[in-house]
Length: 237
Image (cartoon, rainbow, N blue to C red; front, side, top):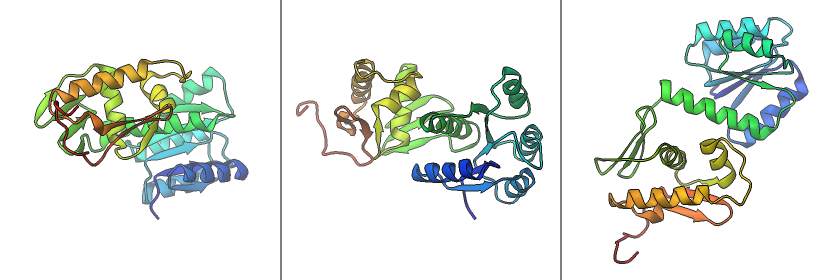
C-alpha cells in the first residue's frame, strides 16, 4: 500500500470523516485506531505525515510520538487532540511532534497546517529545486534562477513565486496565497497581493520571463502556466 498520510485516531467517526475530507483534497490516507499498528505501518511503509490523537486505547500518544520520531526522523508529526492546555502542547512538541492542533478545528486550518508541514519536510529532506521551463526555484537556498541568471526577489515575492511554481498549472486562490504567504485571512479589499504579483512580473520580465505565465483569474486567484504562452516581446506588451 502506498499512502502519504497516516491517521491515528480511535474515534471511528472522526477518523472516517478525516479520511473522506483529506481524500477529497488529494491526500492518500491510511487509518488506524491503535498506536502499535501505527508503529508497524510506519516501520514497513512510512508515510510523509502522521496525525496522532493523544488519547489512544493501547498506547500513550506522547509515547507514540517519541517512538515514531526515533523510527523515522524525517516524519512530519501533527498532534490532533482535544487536550488544549499549554502543558499538553509543550509535552507533545518535546515528544517529537512538529505541530499541534486542538479539536474541534476547521478543515481549512488543518489543510493549511498540512501544507506547511509538507513544505518544511521538502526543504529538509526532499527535492530542493522546483523547475518549470527555464525557471528554477530553490526553497532551501531561497534562490531563483532564470536562464542561468539569479533573480533578486524580496522575501514575500520569493514565497509567492515558490507557491505558484510548485503548483504550476493549478489555480491558487487569493485566500490561500494571503494565508500561506502573509499568514493572515484575506478580507477581500486588500491590494497587497496584486501589488506583489505585479512587482514579481516586472522583475522576472527583466530576465526574459513572459509575464503572462502568471495568469490572473479575477476575484479568484492566480495560476503559473506550466506551458509558455506565445512568445512575448516588449514591443508587443
